[in-house]
Length: 220
Image (cartoon, rainbow, N blue to C red; front, side):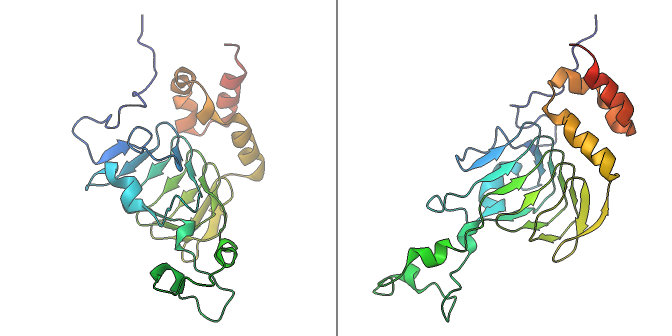
């Protein structure tokens, strides 16, 4: 009888023996404003356990914006998420944040002038690969299956299965046809039970969409 193909324990932060530079983030990040799906990993020789403090910047509880990252994402060293706490009020003549220094400069400050700059949650889909030192700006949504090239600055939404690069990041090409992208998003293999994902590794690796659909249609 063969052992069940369930993959690594998603709650084991270091599933690769002798490779503690690679860590699964779900068990490593304990922050109510950060949600990370199972099997998403961060690779950093200085320790993936420092992801939240080193890679998620200007993330202040009083702002309340969330970072949501899906399952099976691959994050390379130095990926940075700039959160809404980095924004400055831009309605006046100066963007200098006088109010945060106090000593009388906070008088007359209207919080609504700053709140208008908040762009909402930052959301990364499933099966997304983000290259080394890429920077994701506040409020961006990156679709399922997208690839973000190294050192890109992502300031606008990325469609599912797009490859983006540059500063600001622009779509270089789509990984698949529109029809196949719709099929992949509909299949959402990343949400399957881990045993079924184990069965599907062959079609996933081979790019065999028909076989993946056939597997999805099989009764369980």
